[in-house]
Length: 314
Ligand code: HSE
Image (cartoon, rainbow, N blue to C red; front, side):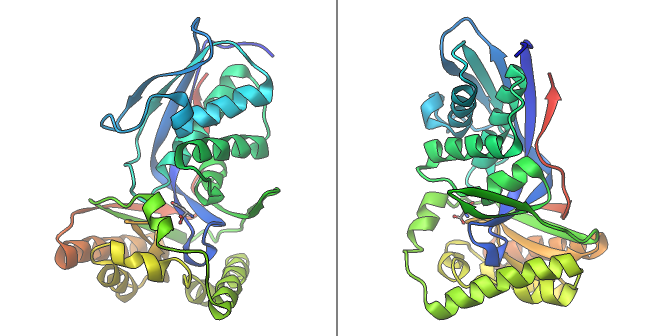
């Protein structure tokens, strides 16, 4: 294993769940993301030197932070004991439904692996990123970390053992992401779910997930539109997002194939065929947040096949 002085990596934001794929399906976004610089230091162990862009809200202790947890997992995996420090640049807003904590974990895993020239496989990097998310949040869900690492749309049917499937995505598929200026903590959004769903809802949910995968593979827009429906989380979480139903309605009226919460919210996403339609849908959703809830919102229109994490400098 040879050494470089430092490595800087980027990991994009992502849409978790994609409605029917609660906890198992996600999509990378093109645009903002988090960056992590990893470098050698004479101080023993792992330290986080600085976090920029979080307004001082994320703990600097490596063991309480998703980037720190992921970096620690990579160091353990590679059996490295030397001192390493991280600098985290948050490009993603906190508690936004953009997979920010997963992006920090992925960027840290990629940066530390790059620094060490470790050559870890994508599956090992994903495991390390999930370990980081678990450190920060108490539990990890792979539907943000997997697309943030790999790009495109990714299905993780099980994570113990880890199984990762990169899905076919039609070239014309576009994702619209609308982030209103309010926050939803994932931990709070999970507490409202409880741990029971009806057999009917379970059957509908897994039927829709399977149908969505088939629709993507066949480029069948009608199947895609009819499958992106969430019977599990959306009905219980929508109430925490001011204007949710109006914004979703605006997306569908403007021609979206489907719309739901992005991750645990408060952002909503929509899937669309073609960029022009996606931009019109996005504008309608932003306007609906303003008129229904008095909230300003940021719009992102991203191809369905957006790239995943990468090393920027090594
Ligand atoms: N699948 C997770 C959840 C994603 O919905 O709780 C959190 O962004």
